[in-house]
Image 1 (cartoon, rainbow, N blue to C red):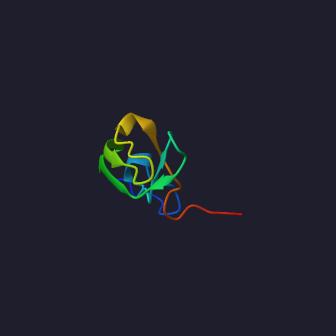
Image 2 (tube, rainbow, N blue to C red):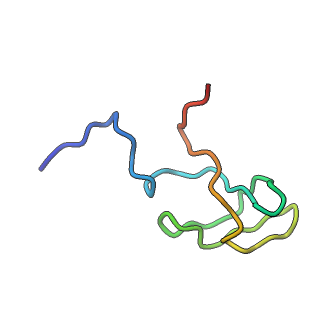
Length: 66
């Protein structure tokens, strides 16, 4: 079995997403459920949007910021 280098980035489905961005009002949303790498449920507490297709992932945990 081949060992993976721990310095390599994880596959995107293994990355933890801290928040989503509501595409209706561009507000971060912390109320969501993921099914693997797919957003299965999401709720924007600002505008009330609850359509998962109208959200995009925010920044990922551990991402480098300059």
